[in-house]
Length: 188
Image (tube, rainbow, N blue to C red):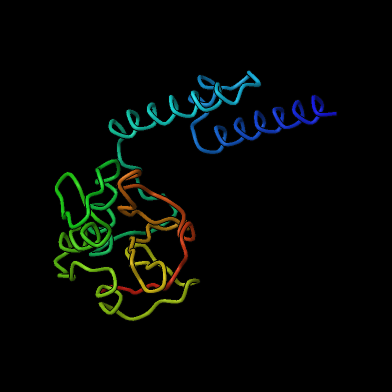
């Protein structure tokens, strides 16, 4: 019984790790780092190697382009384009570029490209424009997270934001609801 339970647990861990790789990494990386062993140590080693490969890959990535079916123009287009061009840059608390940003530093500099001055504080930026309901988000809108507000990103369309998330991930594109949503404002 103990051996059977152990083997079931090992199979479950192995399947879970495969699923994480399939979801988190491109199919190319998933194929390279596929876990076929039943060893938890092998799984841990593969995760460490995959994370290192992801960091190397992130440093050479080009910024994703706005989605073709999302119209981004004018000042919002300038802000979105600037922010997307920073994807892969590092996160550093208090930084405003050009090679590292914190969340409000990225949004502040992105909107500065459009001629809009924003404060360097996510909570202060929340009062920089009229509130926007979730269902009416448009590219360029500032999206805020947590309570009290302590994080901000720029909506880019199709349910995604670009944001300087944390020291582990840096500037990246992620889902608009990947963190506890607090609200959004439209910059005019």
